[in-house]
Structures are given as structure tokens and as C-alpha cells.
Length: 213
Image 1 (tube, one colour):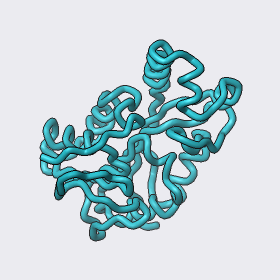
Image 2 (tube, rainbow, N blue to C red; image 1 turned 180 degrees about the horizontal axis):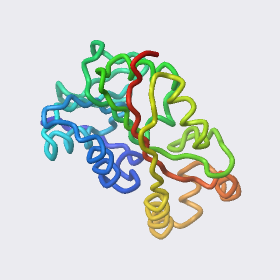
Image 3 (spheres, one colour; image 1 turned 90 degrees about the vertical axis):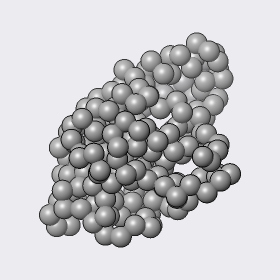
């Protein structure tokens, strides 16, 4: 088995696999479902989906650092998914959609590779206050309305929205406790006043592919 350098942004995902399990419980995919994780980071979720759900899971990330080749982890951008049309039952993005350079293109690619009953699963941060564009781990933080609009405008119907902000607050609280507030804000690349204006939340969205774009 290969060794992959892990990104702290991925390892410290709010809620761990709790939100992942919530999404897949809602979707009720069959055991042999084909699932693609975009922005897979270390590949931890890909392994989890294979082991717990017996899915045929794949991961894609343009920044993969591999020491040994692993066939189900692919180094490629989400804007150009190297899978054929209608080949996937589900596409997953955890803490990665906000970091995508061209979200519209990514969503169109997701729509292309999903089959007729395919589901798009996204968990990420959103602004409960002011939207923002930040550097580092946080990326772009859009409002709930903007996120839903771009998803629905690019081939999907929202089936489920759930707020998991408590998991983000718990994770950040632990980080502040361990590192101190100054180091915490420095690592995120944002000042406390900006964070107060943004009022970061964390969401789960499950969307179904529309019949036609």
C-alpha cells in the first residue's frame, strides 16, 4: 500500500466521518456503487468508503503526492475528470468545492460523469454573514443562497441541506485551545474581525442530477 503525505486541512475536516455517513445514509447507494471523491487529499475517505460500504471508490486530486502508484487515486484537476460519461453513481466533495478554481466547470464535469440517478454530495464551509475570498485552507466562503444557486444552475436539484456548524465550532475551539488564538488565525490567514463578519458555518448538500442540463 502506498504512503501519501496528508494535508492538515483534510485530516481536520469538521465532524470526521460523521457528515460522510449522514450523506451516504441519505443516498442509500447499493454496495457496489461507484463513487468519486474530488479533492481527495490523502485518500482517507476513499479508503473509508471501500472498507465500510464496499463501494468502488476513486479519489481525484491535482495535488496528490504519491510515493507508490495506487490505481484508485488519480492526479488530475476536477475541471477535467478522466472518467467516461454516466460512469459514476455518486460524486463527493468534502472541504474541496470552496477551493475549486472554476466551480461551474467542475459541476458540469460532475454532471457528465454521473449516471441518470446520480447524486452529488458536498460538505464545506459557508458564510452565515458576509461572503469572502480568503487565502490558505479556507478559500472562498459563499452564502448559502449563492452555493445553492450555482449548483442548481449547473445541472442539479438540491434534495437535502443540513447545517453542521457545531462540528466546525468544536474543531476550531479545539485548535484554539491547543495552539492559541494568535497561531490559529495566522494558520488560517485571516484576522478575528474578518471572521466575525463572515460567521463561518458548515453545511452538507445532497443534490440529484437533473434529466437535462
